[in-house]
Length: 278
Length: 307
Picture 1 (cartoon, each protein chain N blue to C red):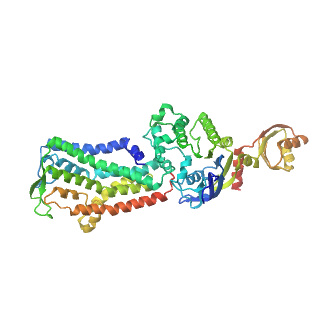
Picture 2 (picture 1 turned 60 degrees about the vertical axis):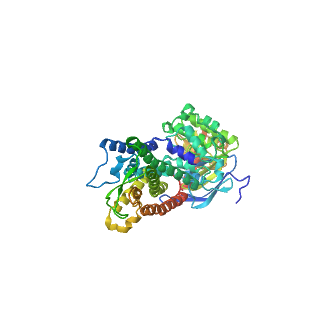
C-alpha cells in the first residue's frame, strides 16, 4: 500500500514544485546573504538570523527559521489535505476501497506517505541550507547569540559552537521542526477524510496555522497561548543560544501528541463510517 | 452465517439505505442472484441502482438489512472482494498516471503483485494499444470506459458488477461490451449490471429486476418479465370496429389507440387468436407487430407503480 501511494504522490508535478520550493528558498536565502556581505546588526542587537554568513552551518538554521513558520506548513497541508480528498474528487477512492484492503490499512498507508513527504520537505530545507551555506561560507564554527541568563531575552554578546556540536543541534532542530508539523498534518489529513474538496482540506491546514499564529501574537491571552498548536514551533532556536535551554522544546514536542491523537482518531472514526458516494 | 460452496453470488436481504438530504433511496430490497446469471438491474434515474451496487461493495453502509456476496455479509475491505470486479458509476483513475500504471496500482493496492493478475487479458480488453502508456487525463470517455472494464476484469472475477457499462461508448464499442459480458458469463462468472439501455439488457441479461424509487417492482427471468406484459401493435382497416371486437375477448387486458393503429396488451391469449377474431368479425389486419420488448414491460410496470 505504501509503495502504491508513494507512486501516486511522487510522480507528479505538484510534488516536484512543492519540494522544489523547499530547495529554492534556502538557495535564495544563501545567495542573498552572500551578496549582502555578512552579518548585520539591528538597533545594536544581533539575532540568530543575522548570523547566517558567519558559517555554512548558520544557513540551514536561517532556512529553517524562514520556512518553518508558514511555507513548510503550507506544503505539509498540501500533502496531507489532498491525500484522501483528492482521490475522492477523482473518483478513484471508490476503486481503492473495492479492493480487499481494510479502510484502516488504506488510511495508514496514505498517512505514512504524507509523513514521508513531510519529513522529506523538512530535510530538504536543512540539507539545501547546509550544502549551500558550506559552499558559500565554509565549514566553520557557528556563531550564536549569548544571553546573560537562561531567561534573558536580549543577547548581550556572541558565542561559538564547534562544527560537530552545531551539526548535532541542527539535526535535532530539523527533526523537532518536522515533529512540530505533525499536528497540522493530522488536522489537514482529518479534513481530507471529511471533504471531497482537496482545496478545502489544504486551506483548513493553512487556516489553522494562521489562526493559531495570530492568537499567539495576542499577549492578553497569556498562558492559554501555551496550548496553541504553533506556540512552540520556534522553540528549537533555543538550541542556538548561550546558555542553551530545552524546556520549551520538550513542551512543544509533547503538545503535538494530543493534537495528533485527537485529529487522527476523528479521521479514523469518520473514514470508517463514511459513505463513499463520490 | 457461514458461506457455503453453493452460496449465491449476491443476496440482498431487506436492504435499506437513506441519505440525510435524499430520504430513503433503497427501501427493504430483497434479491438473489444465482451463479452464472447475467442479471440486469433496471430503473429510472434515482431508482437506487447505483446505491445498491455501492452497498454490495461496502462503499455505502445500509441502514437496515444486509448485502451478501457468496454468502458472506459485505464489509469494506473483506477478502471476498477479491472475487469481485466492479465498475461503479463511471471509471475513475489517477489522472497523472498512465493507463498501465493505473491498472498496476489498482491491483497492487490489493496486496498482490501484478504477475498474479490477468493483465494480458485486461490489456487486450482495454484495446488501447500504445495509448495504455499515456496519461489517463488524455483519454477520451470511451477509452476510460474500456480501461475501467479492463480494470474490473484484472482478477478474472467470479462476480462482475457493472454500472452502466456502455455509457460513453460508440455503437461498435457497445456491441463489443455486450459480447464481452456474454463471454464472461460463458466462462462461468456471474454478471450483475445496471443499465438505462433496456434493449441492451434484453440482449445480454438472463434475469432482471426492476426498481423504482428504492423499491423492487419486479424480478425474474427476462422471459418472465416480458411474458407478463406481452403486447402487440396492430394496424387494421377499421380501428373503431377492432376496438369493439377486441374489447369483448377474454385475454385482452388493455387496448390503447396509437394512430394509425392500436396497442393491445395480452393476458394469456395468443396473437393468432387475436388475428382470427378480427378477421372473423370482418376487420382487415394489415400488420401485427410483436411488442414483447423489455422496454414495454419496464414502462408498464413503472406505470403500474405510479397508479
